[in-house]
Amino acid sequence: MARLLFLTFLFFLFSATSDAKTNYVPNQLIVKFRTPFLSSPEIDSIHSKIGAKVVYERRGKLPDSMDLVLLPDNVSVEDGIKYYSDDTLKPVVEYAEPNYRSGEITGWPVSPKMSQEQLSSILTDRLHLSVTSDPFFKDQWALLNKKHADINILPAWERSKGNNTIIVAVVDTGVDYLHPDLIENIWINKGEIPGDGIDNDQNGYIDDIHGYNMLGRNADVMDVDGHGSHVSGTIGALTNNSVGVAGINWNVQIMALRAVPGDGDETDADVIESFMYAARNGARVINCSFGKYESGIAVKDTIDEIGKLGVLVVAAAGNSAENVDKIPSYPAAFTSTNLITVAATDSDDSLVWWSNYGAESVDLAAPGDYIVSTTNKNTYSFYSGTSMATPHVAGSAALLLSINPNLDAEELKDILMKSTTQLDELNGVVKSEGRLNLGAATGLLLESMALISN
Image 1: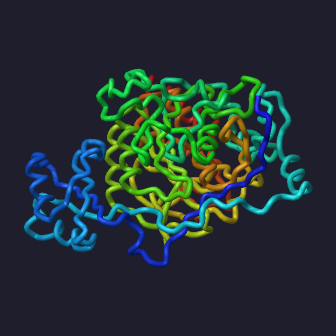
Image 2 (image 1 turned 30 degrees about the vertical axis):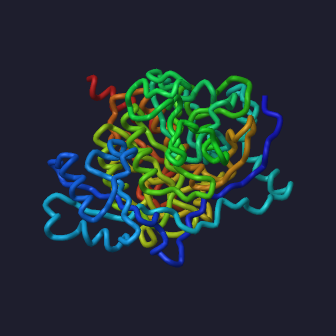
Image 3 (image 1 turned 90 degrees about the vertical axis):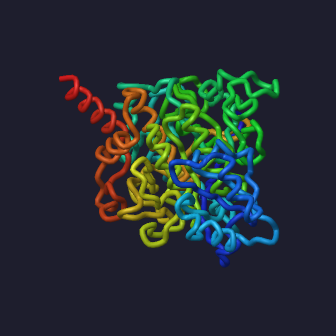
């Protein structure tokens, strides 16, 4: 049983640097080759002519067409791009680009604390119902509240409570896989023997029992911040277990991919590798509660590639109160058909003042303000941000897959978009003009399945 409930309100903020030239990893390039692929020796020969060295621990872990290379100290990133963009290489090299990172960010600051009066005002909007035995369910307004500004969870739970064959990858700061409200819904790589130092399943990763740490190049996916654990609880905290909170999925597998440091300074290569790991190891949904102002086309190409494997990527729109159509943040602004981007609403069914938006780039909204969920070391916290809205959509996608695992990513996205609760305030603000409604989504899915069977 948790001993402490933190009232913490965390925003995941995107911020640009004043000097874009510093916004990538020095001396690194992501190089994509055209299909049909050259042989490895032929590719290595192209790299060697400029003195570039392949990061071999990444080869085969990015898309097959991509290499991460290290440039020699006397070759700048700009000069490296010029080399790979030369007309003589155009028949075989599609592009070369920097390995972008977040650059200088302001962190994930705690918002001003609420007064007791403000807190009480929010609590009165919540329903104190014995729907589950989870003690903090009464505080989960996003699942159920008096104003019906929730995701309409009860009809959905009547149809499915999830399925532990569905894997959701959380690309984040890690996951507290020992949290008592998460432990039974953590993905276990059954092809791997823990702690023996051997890549038993020959997937290129040693001892990856619960996922992988792209930053440390090891299997330690324990959360360093609490952010990834909070996201995971929304997707699939153990439910009706008399502990903590309820997850959208009572049964699910959460795969932990640690690619976002505590300061949010993720790189494109780490994100790309995480996406490929998730897809190659069975994940059907990837939650991305992160973003940045600069990103390479390699990330979009990777999203497109895993879409062919039926993987839906769910991305946070960002918390800068900006129009993503005009000021893009990534991966939210990419146009991949298997990518769904999420803005945040509050308990009044209004777009939260800090939420990014975009009539073309942002697909739908979901609750993201004062969301209670699991955090590190057997604790629970209230966080705010599109980071918190995103797992409501990712968890909903997983629940839909538990009803029909044969849905492809585009079909999943279509159902989520078409079933939103239409809100005047979201007209012209998000593409669907609505807020996530999981009850309606499960109903729409069952209707479509009935039509097909008839």
